[in-house]
Image (tube, rainbow, N blue to C red; front, side, top):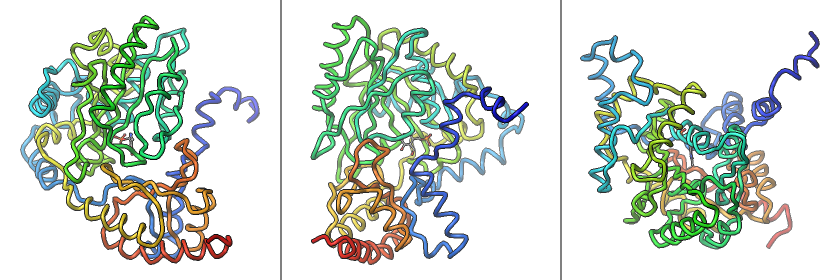
Length: 411
Ligand code: PLP
């Protein structure tokens, strides 16, 4: 068989997504390659959201005690497809205590991180044989495109709301059609650091109730929450299902527990959501069809022992202050993030790709241009690196801005 024939046997979608790297991962891989050449001390990698703060002490203790004390056959065996029963009870118990809800163990499906939770939720909400649309707000986490399109649905992107990157109610209203199945929200937001307020969420809830009546079917919020606990200056992340019950929370322990490589999170359906039982079953069926049954057993059990543990916010907050003050002092413009660990900075000169390339090639500063977030003209700086790294990068950011302006004859 020729390569040409063989090519026709693989899906165009998978081929395209397999070959196109994300802008974030492209820079991350470049950083690793370049570090082998010039040494990692010379590379300032602000590309990916890999936490630098070590996992809370309790996580490590849980790993050790489980490995020492548990029956290895149980510990490393398959769990129930939606997650071990005791693990699910522990997670919903924590949510119920913290947010005053009444979830039970059947409301939750434990997954390999938020990515899997999102993917199976999009599949679960899509109706076979129909056009299915999911709406998100720019700037958005670029992987949504792949998760939504991989399920045969369409991602509809609402333009950014300037200057505060809040929820564009008018934009969402204009984007809703009879094919709308869900609105993807991410708060605290990657890349802007924005945390949506209760007022904004109530206004969105009112709109969705009204529009659902118009189109004759529910519109769900798919709430992507890997950064739920990472908030600063006393900001609280509103728990969206308490405002709009047709919400499916897609949570991840990747960031709060600094263990993104362990792959653990969940999808959570409000028990009083429209068709809640059917959605839970569809999530289970979607997970099954995508091969996501039974998230890694050891990590599930670690989570069970640590559900009440909180992340070390102080370290990220120090990073946030240092980065924000350091950048704005030398002339960069950005809104101070309220949550997550990203800074969304206006690209000097307006061309984000050009500035990102310039910073990379001249100063080994790896910062992500915002084109793939559907919000051109910005740079995303992931500040979950060590504080020392941030401090030593600031003179480079300063020189980079000055020389970029000089080379491009900017004021
Ligand atoms: N959603 C957002 C907004 C993210 O930033 C990330 C990871 O960076 C994910 C989802 C995926 O998270 P996970 O590691 O849990 O799959």
